[in-house]
Image (cartoon, rainbow, N blue to C red; front, side, top):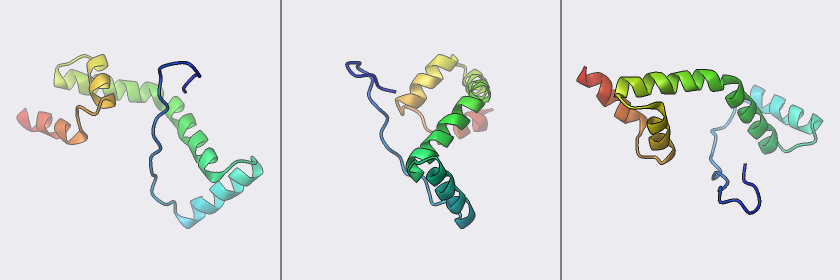
Length: 96
């Protein structure tokens, strides 16, 4: 989250594919009951799930970095700077 006066930039919006009818209906209802837009409700759900799964995500990052022969912090940097793509990981598995 960006704080006024800080150099941190808010992430750009991204598009999420359409939900099925059932899930869209329930998201609409849940957002209504919370007096929020569907977009705000969905963003909250994604943020909650990321925090809930953070330890597992960090373990995946550590394992992948180890397989690549680099430190997890270096892989994190490459991912966030878009210097690596998921397809690059397939090349690593093929080399072995």
